[in-house]
Length: 248
Image 1 (spheres, helix red, strand yellow):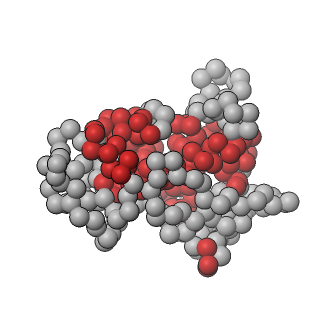
Image 2 (cartoon, helix red, strand yellow):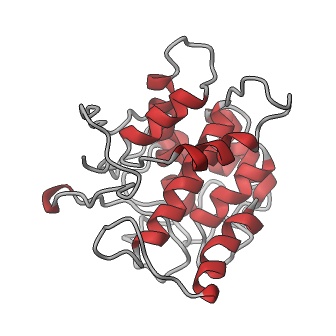
């Protein structure tokens, strides 16, 4: 099983990465993920605030009056830039949580502020934790396009929602064999009817997927041998998990 290889292009309706075919036998719970082959290492990862040195495009100032920087990465689709500029009312080149919510609603469905805050944490602007810049916005837009394609693939009845089994299959197709107990904890967050069948909208699906992917990536930093287990100190565990809780 390999992880999806995310492209660097940005489209208004980007397609999903090649999704691995289901294996005939699922891996055991002790091996919830596998390292990708060297030739298929993903070039896409969440930005946890580490310094970066992206190739910057020219300033997107005139006719909007923006400063030379920050800029969108080269090749960014004009629709992505337009969606950002439409909500950047102060022409600062950065947008806050509510502006990001408005921008994404123009290209996808409306997201809750809880999901927006999680997205801003995962695609963190290293210079401003409370606002999103052009580079982070372009990456976020592209990533949501991949998640939308995966959501539509596993929304087999085309209801616009997926149930627990479809969520399990979607996460498994991405390389995450989430144990049933963990899946139940995820689903229970959206159980508003207390015990009845829970169906997830795209908004909730993105939130679940980002939490699983983000926490798994952080855990893999400690599980260097990909055994499915690791020894963590109390401090390490808390610093790993709490940011995801606070982001919500």
